[in-house]
Length: 185
Image (cartoon, rainbow, N blue to C red):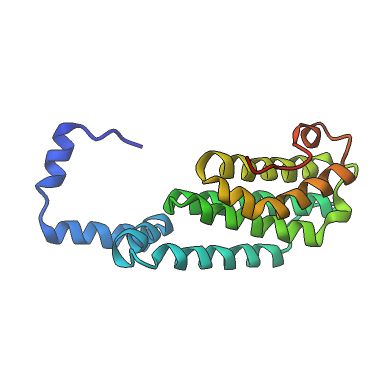
């Protein structure tokens, strides 16, 4: 990303309104990030974040129906989880509300724990590692960025994930680093 010098900033401020409109329209038409940014912050500041949240939730549903390449189901599920995490990362760059990001992570994890608990603890540890790291990321996001009440709200679901991981993949080193359960402090 280029650094904006004082001279460049001065030139940008000197652009006419028509030129600025043309630049904004071109950026919004080409790049999904800029369209969503403009939508959330300027076009629909009241409900834009919720609209984008619902769009990304639908995106996670579409990803879960997509067929990913891989020899085994656990390899395909790993690719699904990575694609889901990438999508949620894009959401986090636009919407700066951590509780909505946590909702998306939990939604993605629900998909995996519903479809694939039988694939946990198998010979393909990469899937177990990715699931465990995603759960760890959710716990850290709740503890670092949200109020303790959110931990209380989500603790039942997260404790269910932790119980399943510790039961089905007890020898995985990444799973062993996770707590047995999360506590409301």
